[in-house]
Length: 300
Image (cartoon, rainbow, N blue to C red; front, side):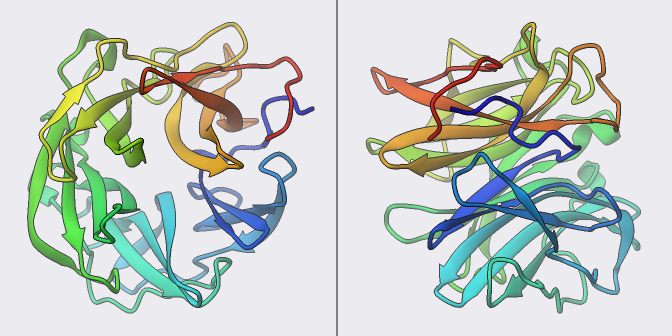
């Protein structure tokens, strides 16, 4: 059995990949680390494993390195996509770094950001995705709420080595529903039974109104239609503002990793946004999140 939260310290925007018998989880900067990384044999017991990105590129400033996500491109090649403070624009922009092991250290050898929509408030929340046909894609959000404009979720194809974008970006979704407030963010793709789903968080991250929803997309470039049952994960008596999730599969079951505040402590840094793990069950092809749960449950 296990009991949420599985990480009880401040670990916002969690994303995990499995390499061999080990899970590697990355999250937004904390404790003086740019990209904290933890390891686990079972998605429940996590051990801190250092800083996956100990050195930022010369064009970036430290202190606001957010929402890192990693994808394995080859047995000895891993790509990290992350949000960082771009010195020239003064906005949050996207970088990419590579390493030969999942723990890193990852190295960003670029002379500037991979994506930086400064005129749209900046670019944040990068998420890499390999589709069923082998094509590689990057999702992100323009940080419109930073300047009072729309927050779109974007996608664009990546080169096979993951180092550059190919073609033109596609607009997928923006905030439109009352529950979303003024923004949507934290996108990721997941394909289930051939159907491409786009998950996203919405509303203010430091409020109990923060929640998770999804849309169904015809392709990685859209069009996408939001689910009528959104949000599928929201605050309850045990967790506040759950969202900015990632999805993993283990032994035929699907699990959602996400962050949430202790109720009444939204916006705090101690304990801050803790990591929760709850199962996703599929009902008529639709994802149903069994959570947030605080009672003991069977381990994955």
